[in-house]
Each structure stands twice: as structure tokens, then as C-alpha cells.
Length: 276
Ligand code: NAD
Ligand code: FES
Image (cartoon, rainbow, N blue to C red):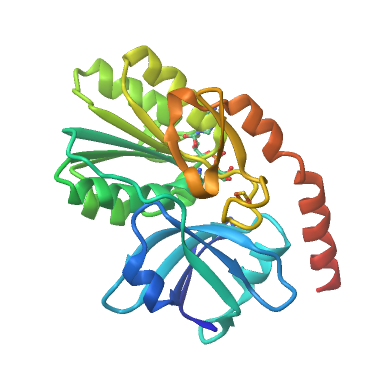
């Protein structure tokens, strides 16, 4: 069992941060890897990316948005409760090289994954700029943590309530137009955002890494659920990724696949809310 030692509500729209005791995973996990949790004996397996690992205190921090029955149940657990299973670290180990200046681009809850990845790039000696975007100021997460980590942070909001008025790609084009020399982009967020970032960075000839979040079941390369096409090859995000060269990802296919169970997830969440 894995105890919850801290719980925070990060935004008014169901964005939850849980700190969980998991000493072995906390020691071994590398930025960008993920875990799969099973809340109880009958629970489904839920892949979750890790925003921060504290090897000294033996904890990992997961940040997630309530989107279905399992994340709603996870969000309802108080400090002191325990999670039945926690498998990890999963996913390929990323190499973090010193390339010069890295721009991290995070949208919504994807900012949590980006934070962990940028720790890796910062530790490798890079200058790190982050662009973090949300629909409105109240939905923007981890700004303080990003300011602690990065050399420059550019917040954006779709409604203009804070930072740059616009979406993350507006801030990215602004950086390039102001003559910022960038060596690598790392984008994490909604698929449509990552696709838009990649369309833009192709024009700039700027290498771009994305973190994909396809449907996952076993997380070990057995079920094929996380299949995606990268550079016309079939890859499994759980073992070959979840990080890939964004310029080679078939985003249109992934967007289609990721919506397969949206209706079922909504129905399942609704019925669990009705049952109370
Ligand atoms: P959202 O729709 O509110 O978008 C967040 C920000 O992304 C926006 O404020 C905007 O700046 C940018 N954005 C969105 N669409 C864009 C577009 N077409 N062009 C340019 N910029 C765009 O995001 P949300 O509701 O918080 O949802 C978070 C999403 O992130 C979910 O879809 C979730 O599945 C995904 N996510 C992905 C990962 C991952 O590892 N890839 C991890 C966590 C969450
Ligand atoms: Fe089953 Fe990746 S989640 S193969």
C-alpha cells in the first residue's frame, strides 16, 4: 500500500496534486517517466505522469485532472489513505543533453509533466525558458515552481487575465521574432496544442520533443493500447516513449484514437456521481 502524505487542490477546476510515499520509485524514477496506479482491488489501471520525485523523503508527486470515474475516486482520497498498487517507473529513460537553450511549452495539466522534464534539462546544464499556458489565470499551475527552476517563465492565458494574452504558440512565435536563439523545444499538453507547436517549430527548423498520452492499459508493451505512429513506424508509447520526435508523430491518428472511449468515460463518471 502507498500512503498519501499530502493533497492540494491546485485550481478550481479539479486539478489535484497528491504526494505519495513510494521510496523505491522516488529513488529510481527519471524525469519524464510515469507510474500506473490501481486505487483498490477492483480499480482500473490509470497511467499518471510524475511532476516531482523526492528521493530523500521517498515521495513522488502526481498531478492530475478529474476526467473520469477513477480520477474522481483518486481525487476524493484524503491524506492518510493509501493506494493499493503503484507500478513504476515506466517508460523509456530519456537522455538529457546540454544543447544550449531549451524552451519548454506546457498547456493545462501538461505543465506538471513539463516541470519534471525541465528538471532533467536544467540538471544537464541548459538555459531553460518555459511557456506555460492556461485558459485563465485561475487554471494556471506550477508558476512558482517553474520560476524557481527556469531562467525565464512566460505565462499565457487564452482570455488575457494574466501574462501574454493568447495561446502558447503566440508566446513561442513572440520569442523567435524577438531574436531568441532556441536549440530545442519540449512540448506537453493537449494533443491539438502539441500539434500546433510542432507545425510552428517545423517552420523554424527547431527540433521538438513531445510527451504523448495515448490510452494505456498494461503499460508494459503487451496490449497495444498505446500504439501510435511515429515516422511511419508503429511505436508503443509506454515502452518506446512517451517522448518522441514531435515532427514525426501522426497527431491526427492519435487524436482519433484518444477519443474512442470519451463517451464511455463521461457515462462512467456520471453514473458514479449519481451513485454518490
Ligand atoms: P486546455 O485545453 O485548457 O489548453 C491548455 C493550453 O494549451 C491553452 O491555454 C493554450 O495555451 C494551449 N492550447 C490549447 N489548444 C491549443 C491550440 N490548438 N494551439 C495552440 N495552443 C493551444 O488544456 P486542459 O483542459 O488543461 O487539458 C489538458 C490536456 O493535456 C488534456 O487533454 C490532457 O490529456 C493533456 N495532458 C497531456 C499530458 C501528456 O503527457 N501529453 C499530460 C497531462 C495532460
Ligand atoms: Fe499496453 Fe502500451 S499500454 S502496450
